[in-house]
Length: 431
Image (tube, rainbow, N blue to C red; front, side):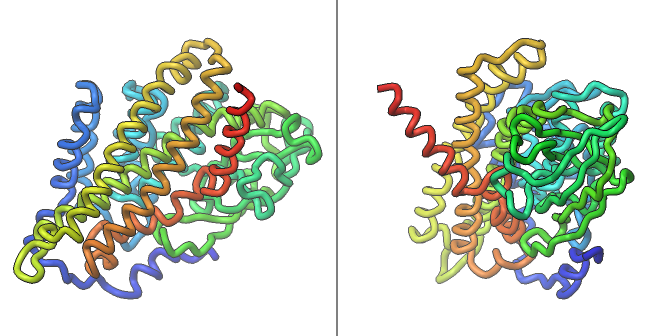
């Protein structure tokens, strides 16, 4: 399980160019961004447009250097130097931050390299965010700096073999010991796990009372954690694994949520995590559709560009309408979360129960919508573009790969529908 599977897969067949040179030239990242800016810029403030411009210039310069035959983790330090591992929280000199900035970061990185964006989100947000909300010790400050600089890699160790979406009733055992807590058990689907230096881990002191005894902590590999890599063909450059706690002892200074508090921390983190995933999902949508639009306007069939045929132009129009609408909705939810939750917490004030409930509901709804839309957009774009889209000649095959697992990250479709159906019952109580 420890072999570099990404290299094995990518080296099985060398890249064979089938896309015409003139079309390939027009599909470069610079043009994809140009079209995206035309569609989105009016939804951004002047400050946000400045952030996006600087980010895009960096990505355009970096794009030719990406080696798709190796995993993504060698890219982390380069993006960490620019503060591009996360933008949910202000860090060091990178003060432009918040949920909307994180969405903008995810969208633009996913348009460049969706696999890299998947891995950096798991490290910077899923693992790194609690160091802002529940950290404060010198040890956790060090973890934060290493994760956000990209010199170290992180992941979240939460789901289990028998408790995937049912994260509350986990079996991982935590026992108080002198100087800290002992962690025992196993976790699965830990994105970045086999490459991670740090693991945001969870377990319960009393399995019969998970809400009252759940512990959240930052674990490091050198404490004794071991990992195995899962074979997930959709994202060959991202390591997703099975993680074993092995009875390690985590010192008090690395505990981000003591018994009971860990449960609240877990669910407090779900909202920004979902909204961050939304940004990445929308990046997949935009990458797929814009690459498809460029190609279809240049690819001739039966004497004219295939975009001239209604069977191509009408489906693309439908996708563009829905992706644009979802983007507007996502930005609006991010703005409300920034103003009514994130900034309130950063001031040390309490978020109102009504806003906590609303933000949880909104984030679940938009995450469900955008993750599903990402898979549909990538797939439908492939059908409209034809054979070239399932090869390595365009970005669409890679966005499709990430989109195929995007819905299950942060809660699968069925779970999100279950949560939303509970809201329907609550609505009836208002009558």
